[in-house]
Image 1 (spheres, helix red, strand yellow):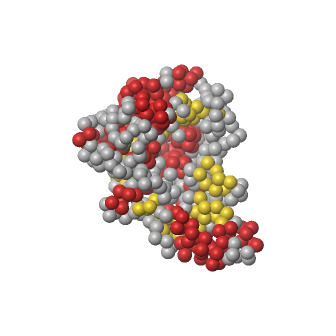
Image 2 (cartoon, rainbow, N blue to C red):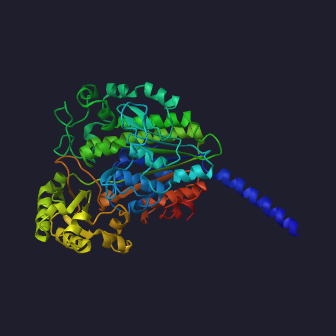
Length: 543
């Protein structure tokens, strides 16, 4: 009887393993929309078709209260957090650019001068995930399948391709001028299919077509008037309105701008993603592959026009069609029910500062010169060295010069406390803290200390850190930006669809760092090494 039990146990184990392999998706497609507020799903809903965003919401899972639980909310940290399942204080991508006190220089999140550009004669390919200090969900997929799984990353921005693809990717591709390039971190030459894609020169088709509105201008009721004072004007155009003659504008602004600052950037990424699926045979066998896509053009458009422009609304109407086209392609190539898709964003965006002022909303512009003068006066009142005590100001952090502090016989803790308390007197500062105090709090405090804490890395943090007031920005008089801990920057969509996804909706708060562990459960693979998120049970279980 004992032997029967053993044999049955072995048979059952084999059967479970076989079933679990069959139950895993053949392909996971991660879609990050660069700069997408959650509210766009509702504001523009009546302009969407049935097969794009609506299909993901209707037939998939929608996390309606999905947030970044840290600051700064920017592209590098956003993509890294989505794919590592943790926050900047753990994965080390603390900003797009940060100051490294040990190296005495500023670091770009994806830079790697030890590698070479592949596909162009410039330095735009000197990128890798070397600055990412933990594994990604894509790394864990590669390790689980003993590198038999394929992982590809694609984006207009290098950081949008490199960080999601992880350390073990088969390739990551981003834009240089009007073609996709890569890095010697991955290979010594571009695959032939990438060369073939680049040779199509699709940008010429986009230029000929021009940026035409999807609807009559009068039907963009979710936006301000087409000509308003809050938008950038391209060189060569009289007013920032649609349609745009891209043949004319390309001569004065360059072909890269035609791609990045129009919805054609989304089309370009979608076309490349389809080519990658087909050429790399992604999702063609029983081993799970991963395609990490990032649509960068919404960010360029949002920065230039703000969240209430017709150009932005039109971008999302057209992006909806791209999503529909991609889903249809996946149905045809991988098979309906064989793949899993998630869609989220790396951050949101603030209202245009001048719009806030004109509409009597909280917000406006920071007077940087006045702030620096205030800091200089404060430090001079403490010691004659004044601003020489400061080694660097980067982002929302101040770094003191440790050597100068020793020469001046000043205690770092006392100085940080005095400066933080004084900075709270500035009109545009919501809260300033000694960074050490925030770090030692362990994130146990209330807003905003808990969000600031998760953005502080133990070896990369400064000495004083602050959050500006809601709606305030250090930016030009037109367009907008992001990076804060306020809801307009932290509240982004989460849509999950396809194999192993339980359709439904949750209104409870979920977090960006929860996506990776949820995918780990779906794919049956280990958690990323630094993962601090929690699988979302509503996605995985019938409620």
